[in-house]
Image (cartoon, rainbow, N blue to C red; front, side, top):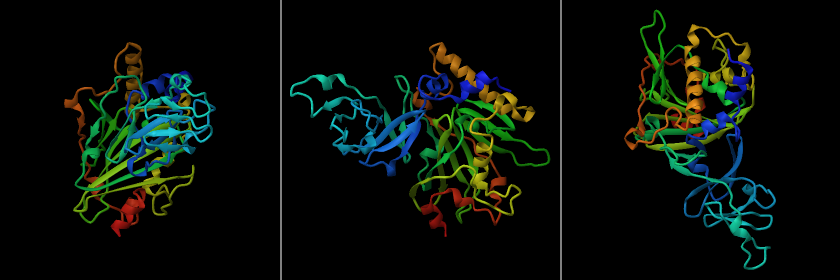
Length: 365
């Protein structure tokens, strides 16, 4: 079990918290490339209100949401070139956050030069906009194998989950082996010859295989990137890929209500496989009651993951990088093992494609 103090430590991710400081040292998805335009969008990441937009040059900008003048929400603003203008008094901010114009101030005033908005670095890769909110120099963005796959169908889906981020990353069990990218989850079950391997990409990602959805019979290579919104909610960025003669990328957002799950009467949970994990995460409570838990031998992965969190917090306190930070370009490409014969077997009444975007589902008909 965890003490109440440690439970608060691990689940508090806002600015100024120890865990928030840890998570800010990694790149996180903050939007989908296809959906980011010159219309600013409000986003919330690690408890911080931000605005994301695409400048007219194509550059993506991640900036504090509230105008430095009177705190108006800048998702109601207007993009001019790569700059963003507040609709209230017209203050204009460059893509670097520097105030460029204050129309109501006296001509020649140097006041604007003293105003600097918070802006975070972004980069685009594999259909996602990635943001980095930590100290400089920023580490390299890990180029995970699923992100690099292109010869086939790639599906990027964003879904909200009404639970703290730590409920997600503790969804681990069976036998775990520590790796440079995090851990391998090796499922060994007496009487079953197949060894199923999935992977934990520290601190917030998982890599795994899903049953085929296409007539090719290829397993769906899958990753989840869990992005803490605040202490009570998370955004899951699902990236799924399967080899195909068609080379397409589909992007979608799915909003789900807490406690509402896709039914499947023939399943012993009564819930479709695509929603079972979300049910397990949400129904622990928004923040799980870890001081009253009882962990067993099969929970070794949870114990290992928590220890990795403690080690990373200690490394930061000592002025070092936390676990799994990549700074060497030779190590930037990350490949995961994939082994799962059991996933090749499909149940006829399970909608394996329900978690995919509508465009991808329609293409399978």
